[in-house]
Image (cartoon, rainbow, N blue to C red):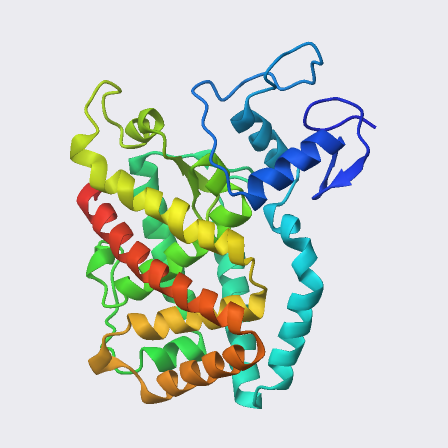
Length: 325
């Protein structure tokens, strides 16, 4: 067998791809230590060469690891057994209504994934114009799916939700904060799963991505490559926060679907303005978090910390998008 990354002799499957032990170890260290790599070329030759000193380009090597099928979440496999026990215990300690709520949220996220219009099966870079077009499509889809979901309808029951025509600006939608949070949640989760933390790359849910090196980010903004980044620094900082703070936390926590569902529900209920919050939605949220804290206090603390980051990231992202709309 040949290593799918460096073409050296492979020793079997490592984290989902046929590879040699060296590439497997490199991938494990990259994810465990949450390293961040960069490369101006991004097309470096990473074929194994025992005579070459200093090794191959780390960015291109990690990118090849991911494109060959290595999955960052598999690096955390040692946690799987204990995590699965905690999830089983979580369900066992919950009342039936909480279990049904979690199942609803899991189905909701899967329905969104099924409805989403993918630009390609392989992620490709985007620019400002394509991002705005894709956001319109994404928000229209999120709105349609969300308003057909019982738990979302309960959360937003006290909202006045008008019909929006296709020419309406999505940021004027009363649901825009909730839709933005949904988008940011899925983007940051996917970025962690796809190795965007290591590549300094924000993966969008529809498989477009934005590279955050200054040169490539200038291209994303469709500016002159020699233009100063200073006017756009706040936009770059907002995108970088999503990758290097929120996505990093997602990747480190490596939550299973039930805990991801609790985290999403917590974030959604807290995004609704206090005067419009549904009392039962808050009761449901507190019940889910109490059960999680009883079974897995570490996961509970992670959800508290990540939720705060998600809220901050969603606000920063909405402000950044509004400035380039």
